Length: 340
Ligand code: NDP
Ligand code: GDP
Image (cartoon, rainbow, N blue to C red; front, side, top):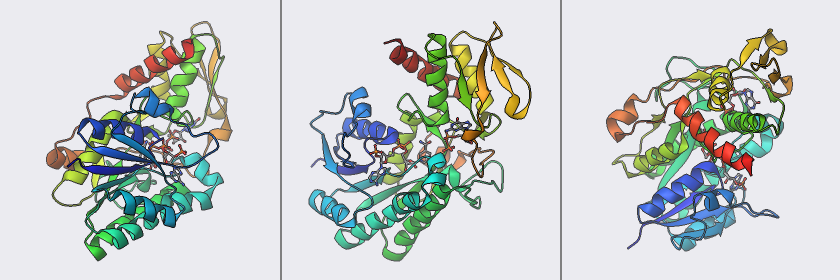
């Protein structure tokens, strides 16, 4: 019998990569998407799985418990991967209540249904390095105390502990992957890496003059999403439900990522000025990067650096793509897209 998995957030970056990965493993995949006036399946199309017979799309909304109940009851999956969320930190400051309801309480809605329908369903929750926020130790590992810095982080904290609580209370195989930032050509353009590769490729092609950015000096531990979904899968196959940090173990500033992107476009950026007046100029003296304080956050997560030791030892999972290689993959994809 084909194994059945329900992936929530199928229209998102990780949902698309995980669906492809599970299809290749022989799963029947049910992809939960929410109804909008124009549903966007571009990522599933990009990976050429939209019309795969092993993929069935089902209407699913984290905010509607009755809907969640009927979806799980009718599919009876062995595994549920909850990747759905209001996932953008920036927006969470503008829509904190919606973020809490989807990213936080939405997870409780799913767990309540699992508790009612079948406690043998394995559940994966997409936790995040944003839980560490104002970091208490370097690097961050599974035992590092949390200190979230945004409504998104706080909502994910609720989801994280609710998942562990359902494991401890009802014996459900429920676990959380604490994933550090992971990017790809499928990343949404509001996130900083994709915003940069899209803008730099457009600048290279003469379609845009300048990139407007927020804080240049924050550091992130960026990995490749395509590899991270394999760690997600392995967590759910592991003999016991446990939390794992998934990271590269290296972190870089936004400034370095911008330099890498321009390097891929055979352009060199030199930095001039300070603070909000700092600019990046190209070899002809044209300003190509400037600061716009509108992209600053009310509370910032300054540095994230993951310790991938546990996942390497136990899951035998390791990140293979460094920041420059990742930037190169994303730049190639955006050059091709923007050329059209
Ligand atoms: P995306 O933003 O690309 O995808 C989020 C998905 O959630 C989309 O499919 C979106 O649907 C869906 N969604 C939003 N609201 C609802 C709702 N009310 N009901 C049902 N579905 C909804 O995120 P990623 O793929 O990058 O990330 C996957 C998960 O991992 C998220 O939970 C994210 O918070 C978490 N995470 C991501 C990290 C990263 O670096 N990418 C790092 C750590 C954790 P729609 O297309 O309709 O908007
Ligand atoms: P996050 O780590 O989940 O918040 O992922 P993002 O890619 O949205 O942001 C990563 C970091 O880049 C954050 O610390 C942001 O403050 C910083 N940053 C700087 N400029 C920008 C910008 O223009 N857009 C975004 N999204 N982030 C920016």
